[in-house]
Length: 237
Image 1 (cartoon, rainbow, N blue to C red):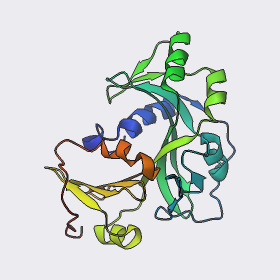
Image 2 (tube, helix red, strand yellow):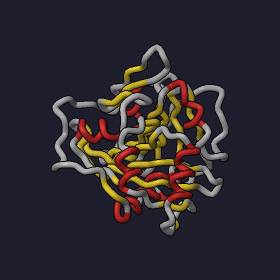
Image 3 (cartoon, one colour):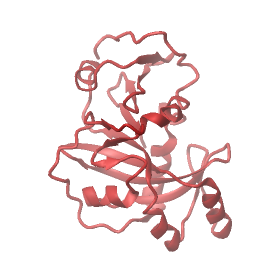
């Protein structure tokens, strides 16, 4: 599974690897990357506060449209966290995202009331996950409908290692860097809708959301990483 030390910050990968084995997939052909490079630092921000990355418009384009861009199947599941919050998530696994290889997971924009109704109407037993959330199976009808839900956020774990110098060169200097007591840093780019989790072991996570919703990402940052008044560039790793 991905990065167990920060699983409480981004439990989606921990949960969705289980979904990869147990979930139901969106139908797809053999995976084939699109011709456009779609690099992780190519982020377009729109006047309405939304953004586009990897060839899809966050908050507008659907899970199915992401699948069509990359011809890649995904495993869908509903998860309910310990605080009783439901989410619909799609795990695309390791794939070619443009010219680069990465593991990708997506959270869909949903109506919580509708998800809870789906759970209530599906009497199948949920499965526990390592993150503490419960994974609920989806009916074929729900899966067909869920494919058209818009993308809320994308979590991208690159196969390649990124040095802090490389991140700075491609993404620019973050507006803020938060340090934990351990080896993890959070680089915040609220105007781009980007949060980068930088680890000294080189296993970084990039999470994208529309800039207008950046507070959702900021709220997931560990409590031992207090806000800084300014971004101080760390030593290169």
